[in-house]
Image (cartoon, rainbow, N blue to C red; front, top):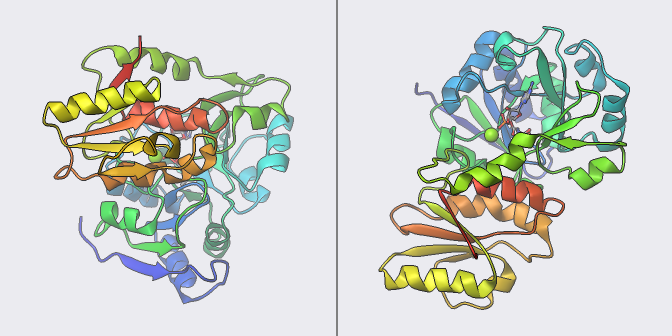
Length: 346
Ligand code: TXA
Ligand code: MG
């Protein structure tokens, strides 16, 4: 697979229907795939109603075909065309959080191409809160299946350059709308059960959802995963940086001891830390991802940080753990998946 990947810069006037939007939309109508920014991360879009177009997403990413895609819509009418019904609680969530980083899993009516849902009877839908994404959706006139625009296993892209690093030569084009805002993917919530279930924590927090819904559950698999990683040999293939990531859970002194020990052992260590921890060390290379008290900022910078360290530069990346409050739940969900090792104070 090799093709010329077009790059359109569209940072200044994202909502304007200009030549680049028209060209991108025309390519989508020709069943090609095009990357575009959303408020969470960049997505890799294709016409959700065309199997051949959707197949190209899986090929470009190297994504396993049993992992369903999220369908992006410009308005509610497009949702109605894809699902068998919209339960009242799903309507409430749309009223409150759309456009925004919340994906609703609803019962599909079979209109979407079969490979979008990976054979499931349900479908994930979301209206992104980004002027460029919404304009593209409107001009293309189609719902767009769009997973994060990274090669499978890599951290999701928060800039057009990240997309380019992963997918140059594999996709028809990239719309560059500048860096994304939220930095982590949308929250995925299953609305096909009586009590909705969070399947993936993300930009809309459990606390946000609880303000609208009488009851919300969390998929037990999310909590179990926290236990499992201690088992040896556990391999993670999500959000993986080039060098192995070790997640440190403990006080700052504990982090510093781990760092010193690795240095004594002759390892080249890259550090990802909050400002509070970074202020206590004189170590390079180090990436600051913001204050512990500003978890939104940490979320915004996290994937960029994970992409920053190259295999040739560091043997190990040490990253601190963050409080699991608010968007911290999503941050820690991603870090737990990205880490090959977790070290906790006993
Ligand atoms: O913020 C986001 O959600 C980004 C931007 C581009 O919109 N997209 C994104 O897509 O993160 P992706 O494919 O990387 O993640 C989709 C997640 C996967 O964990 C997938 O298993 C889940 O949503 N998902 C999609 N459809 C589903 C369904 N019908 N039932 C359960 N889970 C579903
Ligand atoms: Mg992804």
